[in-house]
Length: 257
Length: 249
Image 1 (cartoon, one colour):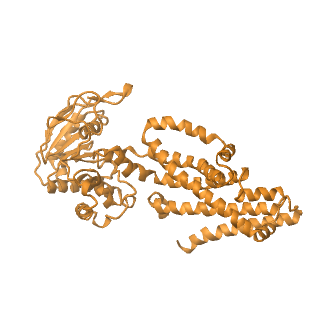
Image 2 (cartoon, rainbow over the protein chains, first blue to last red; image 1 turned 180 degrees about the vertical axis):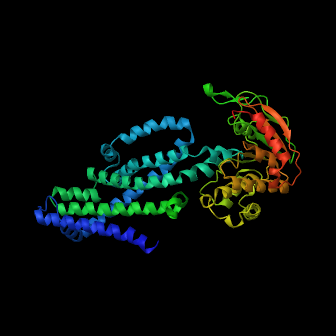
Image 3 (tube, one colour; image 1 turned 90 degrees about the vertical axis):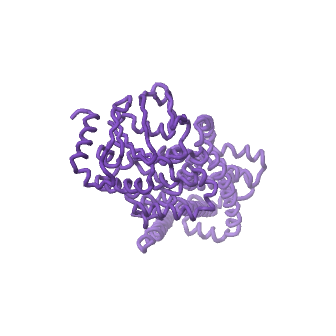
């Protein structure tokens, strides 16, 4: 990366974020917005520092439940996607059920999970999993379904089995789709974990914000939101790095530009 | 022979019989949609026939033949593999190479490098397909079709997507490969000059349903130079074949 690219990738978002916070601070000061409605960034950062210990503690819970759910979703989604892409009958059978399942708001599932597993981290992990496996499965299946028949013909002409074709063409071909879906899935998993904590949990950022809201400590609620946003960006960036690292060949257009 | 499905089934090829001797270079030419590619896919076993039978050396063809190397109009190189790894692909599939592939990888890689070198890609073995020009990709694709030493090399309009100069260059590459390795080649093309320049025998197919109209032996001495294409005997053969194919002028 040359200096211009670094400037664009690091400095531009930093300047933009700073400007956003300044504008926010200005609006709060000029219109004298009460602390219980919209705290200014300075109030939020103050709360963030003051309550750093519980915030850190709860962030850690949210982070690991998100990652655990995401990991299960990745394995399950990959397997399911390959199964769907493998055969038309599996596709026809599973896909409608999958779409139906995905249409259920996961908030509605959390009480059931709590009923089964009790208050704790397990419902958060499972909600994160349930909400995030769908895009992975659909993307992997799409990658397999859109494999150019010419590429498969090359192998079929050599007498390759269906499994060979899957290993040599299908799966490598759908990896860009897979990694692309991870970026969507990681943010969804995060949403799932926090939603579950908000409905019922004894730890986590969602729970912390719920408690703060109940006692009108609005700056803490916003501090929680801020931490969520930062964690979201970090998780997204991590998967994006993994993506370019493993499927560089699919990004050739950008590398040449 | 018909293939396709249900209402879309079409009788594509009728009563076609081809003879190919070991080490012979044959070309099949014909108008667009006459079933040239279908014929090739049937021979290689890529598409099973819906009606009719198909046999090679008396044995019916049921699945893809093991001893066929194929190259198509687009090079179909796998974009996530380097040129070298693309050429090595058949060895990961076809027996007997497959079982010892990991163990013999170095040996195979050297062979693949030599093969790529022989078609002028010596310095490009570790380039990815998108880093190669169209002509280079097609060269690599032909190497891939040859690496497992197939009994027959089947080329389905391999130079159709290339510009005229690159195409002539690749004719010479193919000519040299065939001369050096004595490999049996079946070339499907709609370029009559290409067919006459490269082949020992040219088969002309008719419009659908495809039949063999004429078997034409090209009695031009080898090795052939590109200059041959401008001589009178060459032109005469091309002209004769063109008349057979017909169409509106």
